Length: 357
Image (tube, rainbow, N blue to C red; front, side):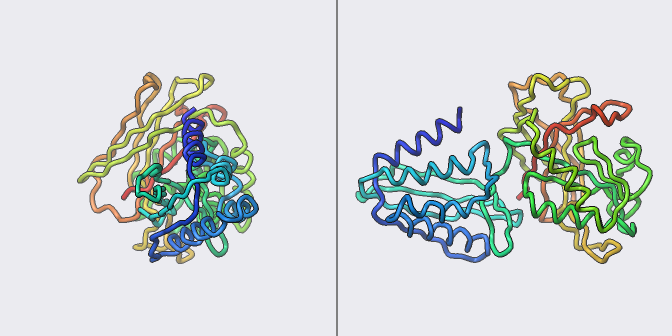
């Protein structure tokens, strides 16, 4: 309902006004910003030939675009609305922020020629790298996302196969895939044997996807094996959704809050929110393939939500955080954690992540 109201309001506004001239004040300093400039120039240059050039604008959006339920079709309808206006306005686009994790925030300000503001909208989006640029991808929070947890070690000979496979798949699927590395018996081990023993693992590397699908070992075929497990899960109907996910780092504590919508078919017994803080790239160490480890867990926690009132946000915290690196991301997921582990029922219902500034 929120999505419908938002886009209806935007379209109504645009019907009342027209587009004769456009301005932007981007001054590029990164490839992300250059992408946005290219996008906005295409948008503004196409105004006079709408709707013929809408496909050019939409080429900046991935076919699977989904930003809090707003799809590529919704965005196309937004741009089509510009064909319905007939009163002069001026548009100004400003890049507010962009991060190394491809999150981007930009502002679209629409004013009458008199200077009166009638639309001032901020877009928060996620970019997906392509061969030579990016595409808008959205945060994918209304869709079923996939979590892969990997037990690994710096000295493990076959672990780099899986680590590289997960990195490649992350580049391919963006925020729809989250993966975390639990290091075992090395300098990056923060006490991860509880994870290893809970799943009954016996060798490195071992990955577990969505809490239920386990793959032992690593080889040149690891990416294909993982992709075969991941792809069908993307097509499932999500039973858990996350909304208003916030996180704040102050001193040695990170506090978080999230509204969780849990489908009535999800059993509440042994239901937990798990949260991990990961370092995107650790440049102090190398794995056995002389590559820096990625997505390394540096802090973790869990909270029982079996008796939580889901009309209220779930609040959680990680304490004792010292000497944190600059590139950290918070990954949260909802999972059944029965004891002992049951591969049929201890599933991850959904996962999402947020870059911490």
